[in-house]
Length: 205
Image 1 (tube, rainbow, N blue to C red):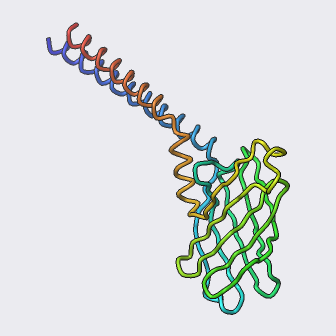
Image 2 (image 1 turned 180 degrees about the horizontal axis):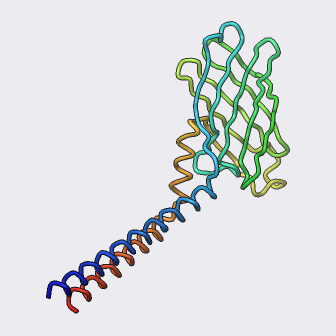
Image 3 (image 1 turned 90 degrees about the horizontal axis):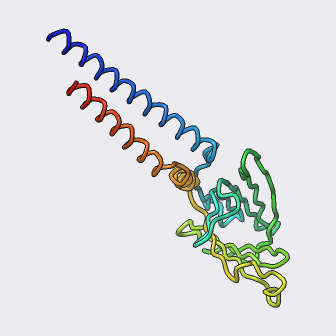
C-alpha cells in the first residue's frame, strides 16, 4: 500500500513539474514575441526653460496623437530653439520594424514672448503649428489641412492634435498591446485543467 502511495506521489509531482515547465516555456515565448514587436525602449521627457529670456529652449520626448496613432509610435525627439536664428531644430529617431530611422528638420519660429513659444512648418497637404508653454512646460502641436487641399489629399484628417510626452509611457503601452494576454490565459487554463485531470486520475487509480 505504501509503495502504491509513493508511486502516486511521484507521478503527481511529475505532472506538476511538467505543468510548471510548460508554463515557463509559455512565458518565455510570450516575452520573446513582445520583444520582437517592441524591440527597444524609448524614454524621458524634459523641457529646459532656464535660458528662455536669453533665447534658448530645449526639450525632449515622444510625440503622440489624440485619437490616432503615429506610423512609428516607438520614437523620440530632441528639439532645440534659438531666438537669434529664429528656428527650432528637431532631431528625431524612429523604429520602423527592425530599422532605425534618423531625421532632422528645421522649423521657423513664429512667436516668442514671455510665456509662449510657437514654431511652424508646412508639408504638401498640411500645416503644423507647435507650442511650448514656459510655465507648464507642456509641448503640443496641431496639424491642419491646407485650404483647398481637402480634395487633393482625401485620406488626410482635417485636424490632428499632437503632444510631447514621456516615451516610457508609450513604451509600456506598446508592450501591453503586444502581449497576447487572451492567448496566455487560455493556454494557462488548459494547462491547469490538464494537470488537474491527470492528478485526479492518478489519485483514483
